[in-house]
Each structure stands twice: as C-alpha cells, then as structure tokens.
Length: 196
Image (tube, rainbow, N blue to C red; front, side, top):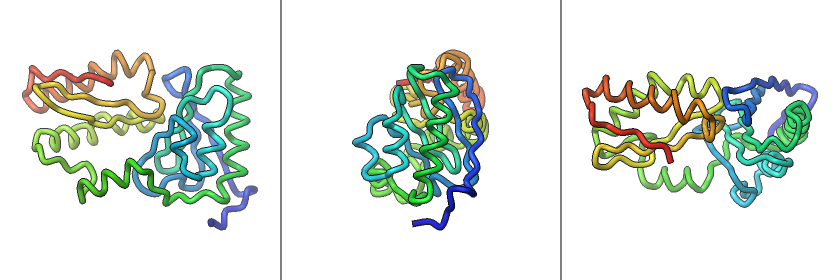
C-alpha cells in the first residue's frame, strides 16, 4: 500500500475532443509502466480504483496511462456530476491503489516478447517508431492512444484507446493523418490503416 494521504491528492479535469470522454490528471502515478484499458468490472481483478470507476453510472471504459485516467461514458449523467463522482473515487481509492499493477493482457504480451513494442516484422517496428514520434504524443495529450493489432496484405489494423475510442475526430481526421504520415514516411502508398 502507498503512503498517499487523501488531503494531498490533486486532480485536474481536462475535456477531450471526444464529447463522451474526460481526462483526469492526478499528482500521483496511476500506472507506473505501460497502459491499461478496462471495459468491464471483471477485468479489474481486485483493483479497487478501477472497480470504483467502472461501476459509475454510464461509464463504458477506463483508460490508465502514467498519471492520467480517461473515462469514456455514455452521457447518462451531466458532465459536472460525473466529474465529481470520478474525483471522489480517485480521492478515496488512490491511497490503497497499486500503481505497479499489471493486467492479464500485459502479462501475455511480456511472455510473448521481451521488449515492449518489438515486432518480428521490420515494417511494424518502423511503424511503431513513426507513430511514437508523430501521432501518439498528441493522442496521449488528449487522454488516448492507439495500439497496432495486426499488419497483413498492406492493411494495418489499429485499435484506439482511451478518449480516442469512439471519438468522431479519431475516426475521421486522425485516421487520415495516421495513414498519410505512414504512407509518406515509409514510401508506402498502398498502405491502408483500418480501425477496429
């Protein structure tokens, strides 16, 4: 357990381009390594902070990255009310939260490869490097991210995470930008980027 005291916790709320996602920036780490997405309480595996957030009315997804948590919701509660509930959960559960948690998905990824985002396909490694340098910083600033799912027959399948999932701008402009940057930097005009 941590030595965090509730009175020392500071939470800043930031709107995102997705009208159904809110980003909460905390002055303590929420996830020390990697990132994690939860869409159901069964995925929380005893993580009380995650359980508290995913159980809030209308919350569809909880996304952790460093000292931020992005809440994607259905709009069932007024935004200000949801913000208050999320802050209350953070304040009460953060003192018992373990920021070193590792999800089952992460355990499986670590077992499959010894290096983060290291692929056997050199084109995938090049794509990861380009995305890390050009696209991911902006997505992460808005409370989201993307993950490469597969690459086959000139088709790159990606999954948006956090605020980017279901965001109209991610599905239109951002997708075009990703495809355009990868095509240009890799001299790969036939590449097609498809969100799943």
